Length: 151
Ligand code: HEC
Image: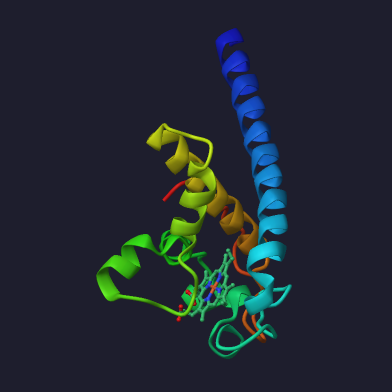
């Protein structure tokens, strides 16, 4: 019984820590979004920024257009862009994986640290974009599934 209580307490601590980490990440993501993304995608992700993003993308409908499930892996790959551009050539959106590599690499010699910084930045953006999700017109809010961390 005691063991169960201890395991339970550890689980609860673990869960609340995760929630706090997500909030901090989402806040960092919100700042980065305002600096780097809102110009094209609008402050709420619905467009209204400069073309062509304003025309083609509504970042508040990523879950809505995917059966209510936030497409974490696809969003990650799209923001990063390094693999997509290697496979399909240039695109209209900046390749953030390259930009963040340059920014992170400036003071670091260790490629693992550089890559970790790039991934943390992209994950923070994903946490923020997840919070921008809205139900499709006339539908209820999609089930609150947290984005998986990492890919
Ligand atoms: C120069 C304008 C521009 C900026 C700045 C920009 N984007 Fe984009 N984004 C686009 C365009 C255009 C597309 C449509 C795909 C394409 O042609 O590249 C797109 C597509 C996307 C998608 C895919 C949406 C879908 O339907 O799957 C995501 C996610 C996204 N952008 C996130 C971001 C984030 C996060 C940032 C900031 C780090 C950002 N964008 C900054 C122009 C931009």
